[in-house]
Image 1 (cartoon, rainbow, N blue to C red):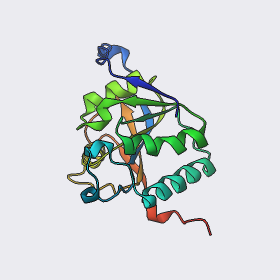
Image 2: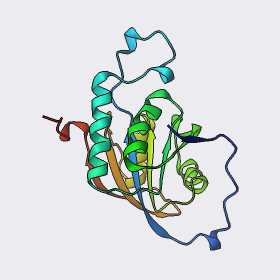
Image 3: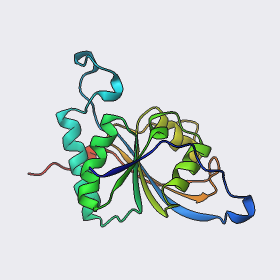
Image 4: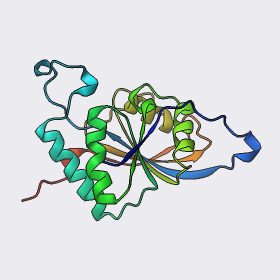
Amino acid sequence: MARTRHREPPLPEPPDQERRPRTIELHLIRSPHAGDSRMWNGPDEERPFSRSGRKQVDRLARHLEQLHLRPDVIVCSPRVRAMQTAEPLVARLKLHALEDYRLAEELDLGHLEAILDMSGDPRRAILVGHDPAFSRLTALLVGSPWFHLPNGALVRIDISRPLTPGGGTLRWLLPPDLLKADR
C-alpha cells in the first residue's frame, strides 16, 4: 500500500478571518473485527484483524467502489488493523493513503482540524481508526451524549469547518453486516 507518514507537529492554524466556513463529507471507518486478543501474544496495536474482519473490509471497499465514492484523501492510523483496512480501499478507489499517528489516539476537534489541514484540506475525506476514539469523535461531531460505532462500520458526517461540537449532521451509518457476502 502506498502511504505517506505524517509525524511532524501540526502547522499553526491560519487566523480566523482566513477560515471560511464550508461543508465537508467526513467518512469514519472503524477497523473491522480483530482476532481473539487472548490468542495474540504481541502488542494490541500490532494485532491483525480476523478472517471475518478481512471479509468485512473487502465487502466495504467493493461497496464504496460501486457507489462511485470519490474521496479526496484516505488517512489511516499507523496500527496494523487500520492499515489493513485502508489497503483494499486504496486499491479499489485508486488513491494513496496517508498515515497519521493521531488517528491511533484519542481525538479532539483540534487534532481532527490539523489532520484535515495536513491532508490537503479535503472536501471529502475517509479516516480509518479505532475505538473508543471514533465512537467518541462521532458523538462529539453530531452532538450526541453517546454513540457506538461497530467494528468495520462506516459513518458519514457532513460538517462545516471550522469544526464545532455538535456541528455535524449524521447522514448515514453503514454497519458491516448490512453488506451481503458474495454468493
